[in-house]
Length: 464
Ligand SMILES: Nc1nc2c(ncn2[C@@H]2O[C@H](COP(=O)(O)OP(=O)(O)OP(=O)(O)O)[C@@H](O)[C@H]2O)c(=O)[nH]1
Image (cartoon, rainbow, N blue to C red; front, side, top):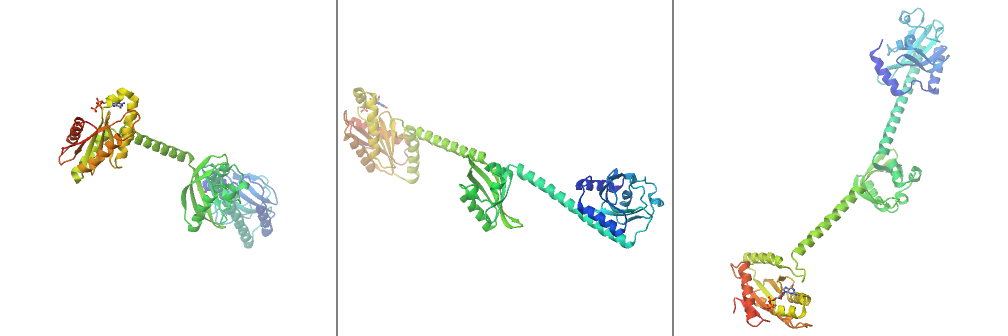
């Protein structure tokens, strides 16, 4: 018949892993003492398994196990808080239903002390038996109870040891199979613990690492590691950082590390966990590089979209944008603004005489001369084929005249190798209410006037 305690007892026995375990001197000593203290010829430490009584230690005779329905101990553990005492096994009605235990048929008296675990569950007994009918004195019962407490302590130690072993197995499995390296360093920065991935990463054995410091293990990265380690130990605060190092095969590695002070029996140590984030960092670097490339390309495209390919000056699109900007400023802030429209004189004949390519070169030279004749914040544009424009922010008519004259003279006085080149320049100066069209039209009219007046000269709109 099952009892409510059976499941707990069987579970506890299974966790202890004691059934069918080998002979252990400590248990043997206890049964030997039990015989002496009770003057009984036979003593056992028994454990009550489901179908059998198993004997952990025997004195006086050796029995491996007996069936549960022949087991006095299975009865004894039903009253776990008190000794189970039978003076005459053949006459006691409490045991008359039991089968004779094989090997123990001659036994006539029994004294069993239930062995309780820390939850109060009886697992078995420390018992003595005698082959004659007898009483047990109170002192003998007392002594057997004291010995039983020693058995219980041994069982508890066994349980603690099992738990520690299990913890150790779990800890090792966790530390050695995770995707991280882990280590503990002492106050002299020497490695006291490292996990398997750490060793695999370094291609070193545990003996080669333990007791060494970073200057032996990672000479290249050691100064950087040491700096962070010292900070953690001085401030006793954790640190999270990305560390860089070189693998034994020369690969550059990045580790996301978490370092923290750890209280150990030997004092405060430094513990660290690191995860390999090389792939992630490399992807990030690649992403940043392509973002920079993209930005450069966009800036270059933006630059191209406002630059004239032949002369390198701003193009007509840029002229329209900049003019709108300057006009806004002139209108909002009253800043003076002048525009020069410049046309190369008789350029058709230059092309006709020397060819289109020579004409291109001449246009490039004109561009450089115009640029040299302006200040940095004056903007020079190729307005059309052989036409140029200059926007002079802050320049009134007089100032614009000076610039126009510098441009004209620079080109006229240049040492042209094939033929002299001259410019005609039209100036228009902003007056309140003018828009881009009227200002440009004014400059164009002035340019036309300069052409009509004989070229290589300057005219302004409105005229004098
Ligand atoms: N080589 C070269 N020639 C160009 C370029 N753009 C325009 N031209 C030439 O510039 C000449 C302009 O001629 P026209 O508009 O008749 O005027 P012009 O001969 O300069 O005479 P005026 O302007 O009246 O002094 C044409 O022959 C165009 O082919 C260019 O990019 N390269």
